[in-house]
Image (cartoon, rainbow, N blue to C red; front, side, top):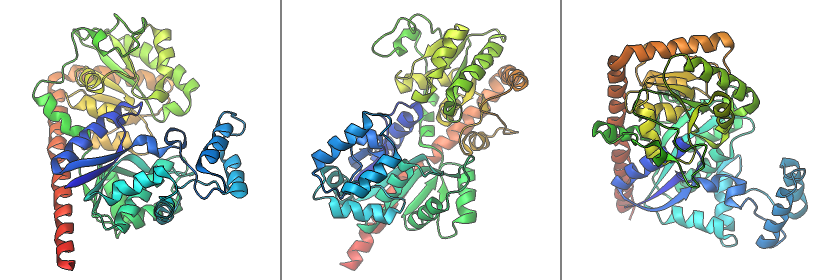
Amino acid sequence: MDVLLVGDSRTSNNWGARATSIAMATLAARAGRISAAIDGAAYSHHSSRFEFVGSLLTAGASERLLDATRSRPSLDGPTVRRLLARWVGIRDFVSGNPAETARTVQQYRTRYPFLAHLYDAVAQADAVVINGEGDLVFTTPPRREALFLLGIAELGIRLGKPVIYANAMVSDCPTTGRNAETFNATRRVLSRCSAVLLRDPESIELVTRHMHDVECEMVPDAVFSWSSRAAAGRLVPPADGDLLVPFPEQDRYLGRLDFSAPYIVVSGGAAAAENTERARACYTEIVRELQTLGMPVYLAVCDGRDSFLEDVATNTGTAIVPLFSPVIGATAVLANARAFVGGRYHAAALAALGGTPGVHLASVAHKMRSLQALLGYDHPHEFPAFPTAGQTTELARGVREIIEAGDAMRACIRAAAAHCGARTERVVAVVEGRQQAATSEAGVAA
């Protein structure tokens, strides 16, 4: 069986996207041969270098025109793109309507090699596995990532392929509320998928309550499949922390990381990254408060948008686990910390593989709250993305308490993560089962 994996984002500058993509690929490969992968670069205008169809110009001329707008910040925006669409027919092939996206890919595939690649990858696969991750948040404006994934799922359905929408979160946006158009588009596509596997109980509740025609089941995030690494004693940080420093090896990272003694890890957060100036100030105070606990504090730059932590490191004299550290080595650092503090879902999940307890900051949607429920926290709680001075003191007190809880708490979290890891085996069974069912139906039809 040939499996198309959609959403392989291991080239992303985000630890979670890299880790969960590797884990999902490993699970999918156990169900069949991964014949092709559509990576995360296809999600965005800039990295895919493709966003137009129907132009009166040639493809090369259209791209040069768009490149000219990108080189001038004053011209690089949605207003200019709308004008280009009106004047010369340039428009994004990804639409708010997944059915239109699928039609566009089919209609223009003979003209645009990028669309031909997408179409052929879907057409030639026996099953399509979508790595949904955290993209189905019903924001206004909608996320292009979500619309892209829904469009490819729709294309697979139209071509008669089993489409397994896996490893996914579904959530309203805490800032802009529910985008009704995206919500309805999601419901239409998911209701026709062969299987929908959601990673947390709050996603299940939302879909069960508001998308009555969608059948779904809960399967924890694919990164929990790495619990077998922890159980085998393979998630161990290097004795020499410099082994985690990526090329080009910069002096500010070298000779700073020592994992031989207990330490605390602090990550950034998706919500915090939306206001880097405020995050810089808040995180500086968080680190200073944590430094009073008497053990080293290391900053983990888990996402490119968390680069504000570089300034926090300067302000507080703190060492950094760099952004482009090997992700499995970085996971070992998280999994062996005495405590994790931050608002990154996957960083907290990777930490849990080794039993590392967390004090969590708010992220976008329900990510951190739902993760705590999954890991069996008695009283799930998240601090604001930008805690006040009093909340920062309370946060440090919470870190002290989970450190003092010691091995008993670690054992509980590690066991919960291992249980989640065992449940990820469901991905393999579902992909195999849906493809076999599709093959049987095709045989009957013939």
